[in-house]
Image (cartoon, rainbow, N blue to C red):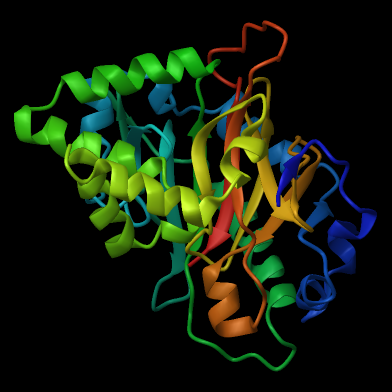
Length: 334
């Protein structure tokens, strides 16, 4: 059963320099047993971080008014397809404020950014064009290394996300309560059902299965049955694996080819399950941490990585920087 805190076997986390990436090279590492691959991009990741988080002309959504966040929201209700500025506080499922962009090439081969502008304090600003080009180049390089050498698959889009987590589990909980209390009566019921979904074992996390169990857990006469089934599937895993953590995003697989993470982590942690234990993904500013997703399984026969986001309970008190603290820059492809 999964445990927490065991140091990862060396082969679970591989390290490569960006210059070493060749068609199929990442695929070989993942198929050979690596769970996460750290890509050293010299100053590349830190430079993008500076341009997009530290010294950007954009005022990022966690520093904007709610009115501007709403004006910059271009997506729908599905978290996997929403673009622009997003606010998600769903206990056990999601817990961040973010800005999400997709990049692709138009018919003339020019790089296209969606959304290509954001409203802030009465003005309009566009993402740094040079940083967008650099993000596209990094994603393309990783995709070539992730795919088989002879792959000629369909076109894809690059994903560029800046995600802000809260300084503590208590801050997250307060924002989740605010979200819940701002809904109408039926909206609050739906929210509670989603909260119930967040308590389920990841083997019950499929959309329709988790929906059904979320409803059962909300029904007084059926709650005990649903809890019993969940406990029977989880066994003792849930309690022993959580340990001194508060899980803000339950174990899940990303619905993209890969997720490449860098950022400034002061409170939250990303952890992955491998060899029966949970291990921390070493997220920092000098390397990109590559984790394969569901599309890599579909097209490249690479096993996706089960991971979660947590708050350690025993973390020493800190005051994260309001602009950069606990911000993750995520690059990916869909």
